[in-house]
Length: 476
Picture: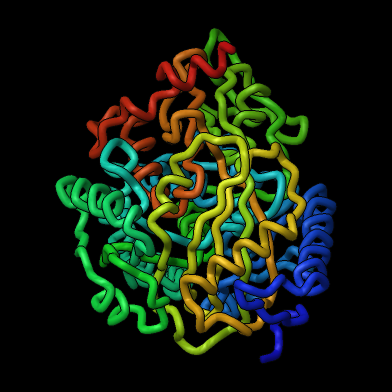
């Protein structure tokens, strides 16, 4: 099968054979080159990755103003470059990824004039590196699951509303295809049952299955599956298209989205935000939202109110487009433990999922290495081997490319959502790690409710900026 987008195809090797050295290394070298080009372009506002699942909706977009980037990033209804078209705003959102876009959309829906700024291309960093997951299955009962349930209810209604405003631009390849978590050893069966029973009690729809039931849903699953849990509410969308639609709505309501400019810091008067410095110029505003994802910690320091948000690197393999061999997101039961782990060292678990474009995404890895964006050949090997153990049919399937990105990690694994008590008018919306796509609409709504003084749907206390776990890390 031929590779797409100019990438040479390589086959995924069988688990018991060593990965052909040159194949994965050549993929690594190509993607490292793309990453370098992306970093260089970021200085001119051209940073961004093409999402691996970009399907027909992405290809319908007009030509992009950012040379060489997927046209979905830069629809003319969304972004301008270099200079803000408005001289002041009610709220300035710093960061045009999915979280910043969702916050801006919710604030503009509430009647505020919003300016969104990003030093690169909107949706061009962490959002573009995401798989587009809207998951309940990977969250234990508690504050994050409560936020995820609210977000899962909100996504379909929000997209329907955006279609009324934007037409085809609101096509984000939404697929309510469900997820399947599998156990392949007796030890993992017990832990899978415990977590799924607890999730069911918390309001998640989950069905316990045996091996035959699992293979009815995914016929190509390995024969070593001993038990599974099916989550019909798990869904997927194209993250760049979703962010694009949210940002387009902001502009349609009188706001602005500007790429290629950097927020240098805040203008503060009397202990309260009075504006933000953008490219050396002050833009008056009543509030600033720090939605910088993995870079939120850096911006918080520049703003004078540090929070502990750190990058956590991940890597993904992408196959060439295939027949429907994998129908939904499928992952091993140990994935939940890897997500919740705070270990600095490498965490690798098995995740295999399809996209609307027919590609299969293979993950997942987690590692705290700062902003080192290099790809590690051995990690790619492990991802490939693990995928074939779960889906033997993937042996010999062409690998189109590999890529990496950064998740915004907090020490207690909860996002930071709310106003900073140290500086009135500074708001934070970050730290969602790998769940930002799924949690975005509930995050935006929660922040808008808090800013307007409305009673929020979700308890905001666990996400406070001044919670002990987060502040303890900052003080040390």
